[in-house]
Length: 128
Image (cartoon, rainbow, N blue to C red; front, side):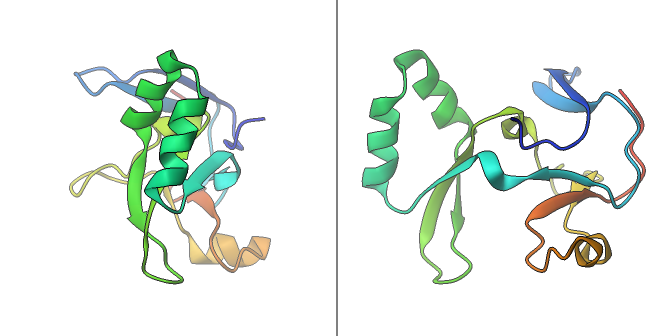
């Protein structure tokens, strides 16, 4: 199944923004929207390269396009991750954008999600 926990659709975002995820039904502020359960994380370049060699060639370009680098919070080492479902189309809204989802400490506490492993609706989200 998808890591997205709410009814959704993937499609063109318009205005040259590429593809995106859109709510198929209203989502209340504080609702769990997605989790990282479909995320693959690679702990070194050799693992990532082996993965790219194992996926069909037509998918390898998509993996490269949607993969992102980040720092492991526990040891400070670099990592590469890629979402393997529609969550690959989620983004952080950029520095100037209004975020729809993220860590909501109050919502996370209600779920017992001490590490904020889910992304929560940061505001009410309309369908569409």
